[in-house]
Structures are given as structure tokens and as C-alpha cells.
Length: 229
Length: 242
Image (cartoon, rainbow over all chains, first blue to last red; front, side, top):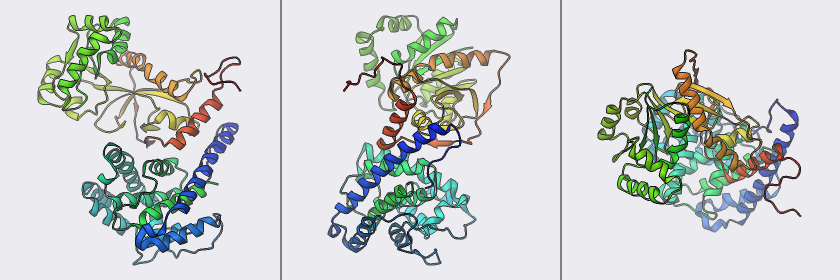
């Protein structure tokens, strides 16, 4: 996420930037503390990954450090594994060659909006290298994912409970939004993460097929916040 | 021009009704719509309660007795409701409900249904648009446009103007202030429709759709609002002085 910029009214921008940055810094501190407070044993096979995340955030990793390198996406990359790896570093990420069928993919995604398992499979497959979510060709797909998170999923959770949504599908979308937030100055994506951080139960260990996704969501959220300052 | 105020409550519709009545529009009715498809009977009970208990109940009763209020028993898009709307031969609807309209309902109005949206279109669609405008250092405002079945995507924008909210003491007050201007903006929009000077701006969807804002950014926005809209010396915001 590039620092907040606006070319108009410079004095107001300074105050605005300072206010946003202050909030982002405080939230980063909160998220880091929350991650530090998680009990690895509660996360089953994601326990080791959580420990590595806790360690990486405790070293105050800065965006320009390259202590952990993530290989550029290649064929056969597993989306979930890539998200875990990306969450462990603040290094800059690079997308790969864009797919050309964004419009058709979006239609497929819309068709399966009541089939969360299919939605999960489609997104995990297309974004096996998650930074590709930020490609310009994927704009409409990003908007759709953001809309599903902030309208349908949010309403369901608020009106019923967190148990009423598919945890894997929800968390994958949040993870992708978090990866994109690192690269974008569109505050709507960061704020979706803010909103869900406030909405989801503090010590939530979801009944998910991929429990690492809740850890990588927190880790990637922390990285997105960190990129702002 | 035959107008209808689409509202969930009669007190909610009254300010709009009075604005138009003062401006000389008499061919207008209030259509009370159920909040949801299952709330018809409950809503009617609430309407009765408001008539007995709420302030301005005499004004509400007066409209009822004059036949200016039509109460729908079914959801807006129910065939019986659509039939009633068709029989009224309405030109323009004025949105004052919490409902989202289906195309069949919109088509019941010759020209369509207008919405007074508290954000400047096409830039700011969706929710919390006033807050997002303030956060991003842009002016707040109101847009009046013809609704379609999407979220603030209606193509024809009649009015889209910045509104000064600097006199408001808080974001909440600013939002209430913007909402309170709907009657006046509707009246101006309808006047444009009736005039020879009608031109509308196309909603080209070049802006963004915004969503409910987090507590974190709401606090930042409130902070920015108070920073950029200081009250004159001697006036407080009700906070204790240290």
C-alpha cells in the first residue's frame, strides 16, 4: 500500500495522512499483539507456521527488508502455501503473466455465489500466485470479491453468526484482499480488512479445511498495515 | 406531474410532502410500503401506533382523511401492489424507504423513481459515502438521480452538488443534516423535470462503490472532520473543558 497521497490542498493532506497513519500504526500494534497472543497448539497443523509468523513480526520487519524471499509464482504453486509464505515477509511481490479470460471467470464466479466450495476452488486455482489478484486485468474480479465480502458475507455474519458462512471461502477472499492492500492505495480494501478484524471473534479458530488461512489473514493484514508507514 | 412519496412511515414522508405542498404541488400522494415482504400486518399496526402517539399526528391524520395516503398491504413488487401503483398513474416516485426496488416497481412510474443520495455521483456510490468523502478529503454532497435495479447505478443524474457541512458539530450531525435536505433536493429535481432547462448528467460509473466503514476509519474520519471544521471561539461541542 503506497503512503496516502492526494495532490490537492497540501496542508489538509498532511493532517489527513497523519491521522490515517496514526490509526494504521495503532492497529498494526494491536494485530501484532493479537498474533503474539495466539496459542499455536490450537491451530493444529498450522501451529509451526503460526510460530514462524509470530517470530517474523516480533523482529519489527520493515518493508524494505528482504529477510525472507518468496519465489515468484510458477506453475503448480499452491495458493494456500503461497499465502502463508507471503505473510512471513514484507518483501515486494511481483505478479506473473496475466490470464486473458477475466470476464468469463467473473461470470463463473457469479454463478457459484451460492456454492462456497466451488467459489473457493475457483479463486484458489486462479490465484495460485496470490499477487496476481492485483493485476489490472483482475479489477472487476477484485470488485466482485470485495462486494461479496462487504455485502453478503458481512450481512450474514452480523445477522446470524460466523458459523453461517463458509470459513475457507471467507478467509481466502480476505487473504486475497490483504495481499492486494499491500500494493494499492485504494483504502476500501484495507478498510474491508479493518472491518473484518473488528467483526471476527478475537480468538476464532474456524472449523475450516485450511485453518492456516485465519493465521495468514492476520499475518497479511499486519503486512498491509505495515506497508502504509 | 403526478408524484408519489414512497415511504415506510408517514412521519418520514411528511417533510417531503410539506416541501412540495408549499411549492404548490398538490397532485401528490404518500405510499406507505411494508419494510419487508412479511411485515405488512406488523407495519400497519405500527402506522396506527404512530398516528396515536407520535408528534405531528394531526398532520398525519389530516393526510389520511384527505385520501393522500395509500397503504400497501403487500410488498412493493407484489402483483397487487403493482396493480395499485399502475392504477394511480404516477409520473415520478420519490424514494424515502429502506427498500431496494425491483425493475417492475420502477416501471410503474412513467419517468421513474428519484433517489436523493448523500454522496456526489458518479464518484461515490454505496454506503458511508459521506464518511468516505471526508476521509479522502473531498466535499460532501447530494445527488438526485433516477434509480435502477443496481446500487446507485441509475444512469440519469439530475442534480449532484456539494453541500457545506462545516457548521455541523459532528459527523453524525452532518449526516442527519444531509438527510434532512432530501425534501428540498427532490423539489428542485422535480422542478427541473418540469422545466425547459432539463439536462441530466450521465452516471458513467467512473467512481467507486463504497461500503460500510470500519470503526477504525470512522474514528479517523471523525477526527478529520473536527480538525477541518473547527467551531467559532466560544462554542463547544458539549465536551467538558479541562
